[in-house]
Length: 116
Image 1 (tube, helix red, strand yellow):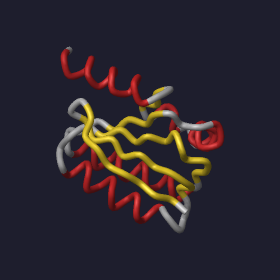
Image 2 (cartoon, rainbow, N blue to C red):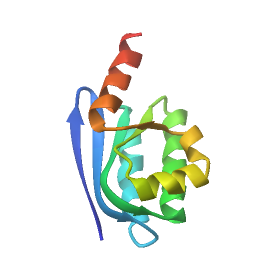
Image 3 (cartoon, one colour):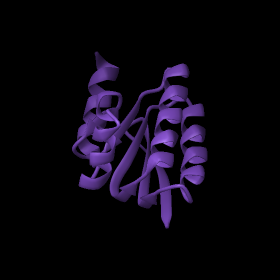
Image 4 (cartoon, rainbow, N blue to C red):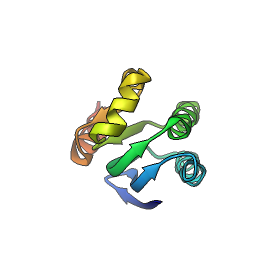
């Protein structure tokens, strides 16, 4: 099961995920992510409660990142756990996504990019 919640924090949209980002749940997250990107605000995906990520989850992230770039929006990942991080590393997506240790670091990075 995967649930999500959305809030605005420090000018960014924070989409917090809870559960497994897999084939069954990726379409719901894809829809939520693309809606966030369409709002034109920077987006942070809070992975602190995600224990699993499969190829459909990766596809969702790649699609969202492409849409974000097309819309001039920055997408950040925060608090990615050991297993999802390993999947991202194996797919070499750690070189594509800005991955932060925690939500606070992601917010600080976005603030510094906005002021610079």
